[in-house]
Length: 207
Ligand SMILES: [Zn+2]
Image 1: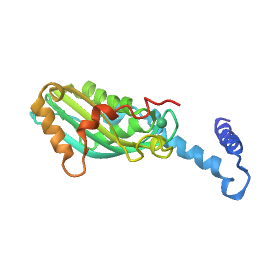
Image 2 (image 1 turned 180 degrees about the horizontal axis):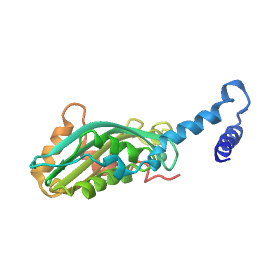
Image 3 (image 1 turned 180 degrees about the vertical axis):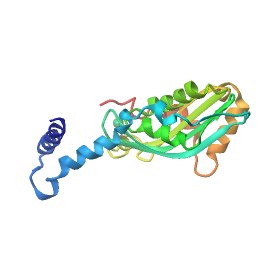
């Protein structure tokens, strides 16, 4: 059975790490790890169309819509260690909006997979582009990567910032600044100058 084999693999992993998989504290660990990993990768089973279904509305509204400080948790595909932080999303509608609660749900669908931060950022932005055909869309992710901080790679408290911007949010400087100002207020990203330098996070370093 598939389930048994995943547990067997975890048992083997524990033994390879020099542990005794049969000792009390570890006896049920393979089962827990399996359940945890299945949950943390449950985004593979979620269908984006189903998630967004029935939440699109025609409106006569063309001001920027912003949902900021969405908490997300994901696993880096290079080390299977967590990276987590805040996601900020903005779009300028072209006659169509999406229910606000669907945006955090969309972030969840893509973050509960093995990811790199750059791809996660693009997937959220591209889905909104395809679904809403908006005048512009922007997604910014600020994240801490445990594969960097726990292993003492570079600055342990550094945050990786990635962004995907399209349409008026890319081309119109005033609209883009308005978005960046709004997400910077109250706990948003602190260092925009670091955006281009730090974007690489886990990608630059695949050891
Ligand atoms: Zn990593």
